[in-house]
Amino acid sequence: MARNTICLWYDGGAEQAARFYARTFPASSIGRILRAPGDYPSGKRGDVLLVEFTLIGLPCVGLNGGPAFPHTEAFSFQVLTEDQAETDRYWSAILDHGGTESACGWCKDPWGLSWQITPRALIDALGDADPAAARRSFEAMMGMKKIDIAAIEAARRG
Image (cartoon, rainbow, N blue to C red):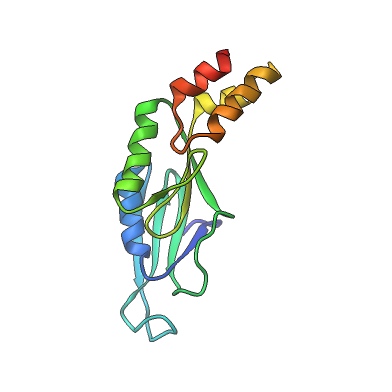
């Protein structure tokens, strides 16, 4: 296990989530799966307790801790994409697997974890040296769920 690891709390779905992430995102994989050596408040001896995994190069551990602490938007993974096809692929993978869409490129996976599927073109537009171009890009983004790169670029140009 890495010295500094992101620990994500799940209500029993850590292994399923880690397997979904590993098959969906590059540089992602499953590591050790540790089973509970005894009963605990939300599980029994032998249940999956911890799942070590790598998510787009980040070391993570999924903890099946029960329903006490659900995910919120206060934590999210931001995935930088290079083009519309990559944006569409990740967005669709999450939604087609039971996730829900939100605004401005945000969505939630079926386990309640928030994701920002963010095209590099959006970041570039929001950081445009021309304040009017950045504002137009921001206003266009505010009306979107999944980010439409062509619409962002059109707004940036004016």
